[in-house]
Length: 322
Image 1 (cartoon, rainbow, N blue to C red):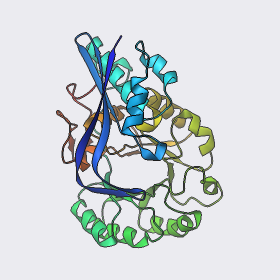
Image 2: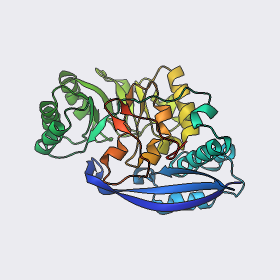
Image 3: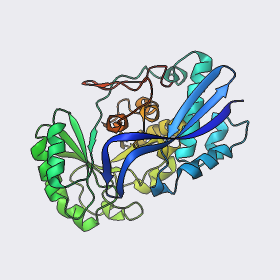
Image 4: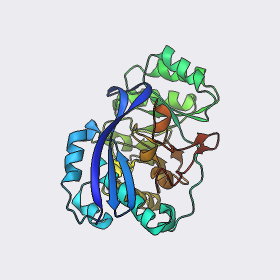
């Protein structure tokens, strides 16, 4: 049986990162190591206060698991969330190490290829966001954090700064139905490709009643397969994050179920290291939108980090994960 060890770690961000719910200067993560004899696997999660998680609560969940935990029994032992994610990914990594194979081989999937990822511009004044957009205008896809009642100036500023980049917008539940209805035509006018979670989870029924002139993506409203029935008629795309699904195992099942129901797929992340993004590169294959830029926001990362270049985010090398 694998022995699990839990460590809280922190990684400095290159710049302050701000969304509608607040700012941070570091990525605080939980790292889980699974050891069996000479073989090791590891995984990372980012506890998220929005879902009632903290470093302490997630560590306690993991430390409370039975000693004979397996990847199969883990799915029932813990609810979807950060704790289950770190353990699930560590056990996948351990399984690959024991088999002498890559995780995608164990899954019977083709080897992942690089995917273009969004780069996130954090919420700031229009002037600061325009400067940031101009600095990153060479990137093919920018994601802008919004979610206030006066976002029109920010939208215009980013488009001025990056006239050729594709843009997606993430409101992080920050708009009302009225604000979104007013902004939607301007999102279309400015060439925005997709809007993430414009309304608060649990208060998003209005999306089924108002016109959706551009694709709307469920983030906070979608966690795992059990979320899907409540999304019908309201969303066009779902954002799969391993910290919400509770690991790679459920993420792949959610992807399959969502595609079968006609949703497009976005694969996103919390602000974490390359270790957290590595398993998500498997889920991201063929996705409509990939947003795995966490490592690009860091001042420091894991050894053997993910490679990012003009082709996008590359799958992990074995020394990192999987």
